[in-house]
Length: 346
Image 1: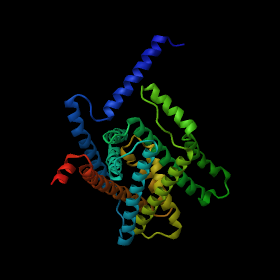
Image 2 (image 1 turned 90 degrees about the vertical axis):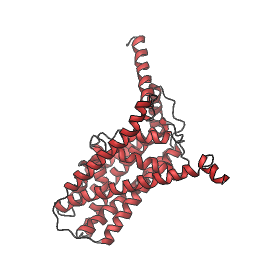
Image 3 (image 1 turned 135 degrees about the vertical axis):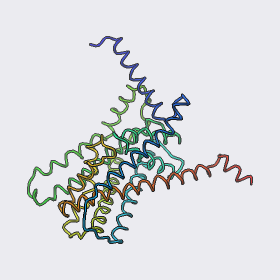
């Protein structure tokens, strides 16, 4: 058995790591020089890697005999706008269910959309730091925000696996093969791990080891299933965006609808497996193009996969800019702010 002194040192180290991690995650360390460097360096780092991602993806576009159908292109753009809105609102509602409230919907969407750009920095770890920091400034406890992101990641991955599994089960080559149902085991196991009798004790045990307070709330399993259904819906909407973009660039037969609708979910799953890559660059496109190759020529499938990345990145930039501007307006109008008081006095 470890000596009591060794156990005490280990517990002290874990508490120190938890405290230090919370300080760094706030992006507001005590030292003014470090605080200033973080405020300048983090946005600069995100923008640099985002620009690099766009350039590299644009260069990957293959030579294709392009056509352009504006109607299908517009539908694709609307679908990805809806996909982004669904994910932002689902996370905001999930956070609220855990006890974390934003002053308004736009402030919550701004925290989500702005932090999403941080995933273009390698390892994707910065997204946690940025979202926790932005949420903390609005009064959301760090531990609640972090746990909401764990729920978000597990639910999104489970939903993507469910949509992708349905596509795999329906493959003609696997018709009548009972073993094809094995693909359902992973998403069902992930959902079972989010049951409050499993997730809540494990999360609280980890928080205690890090010297943090326990969770104020846990999600009822009915809520877990509801949020999971919303993520399934979101991946079907994204699949519609992929289908529409493919139809905008190349003729697509009716038999290609199923692979196209499942392609985004499959690409998302590949991007999670390639978590060390910035925003899953390359991994997501490989999964997406592989699914689309069942309905399109391989070169066209790759072009659509890269096109999806470019369109979605443009949508993410639009949301980050628009929601941040709306959030600033909300803060300006919020009761108790100096601007509101001056406006009333005038």
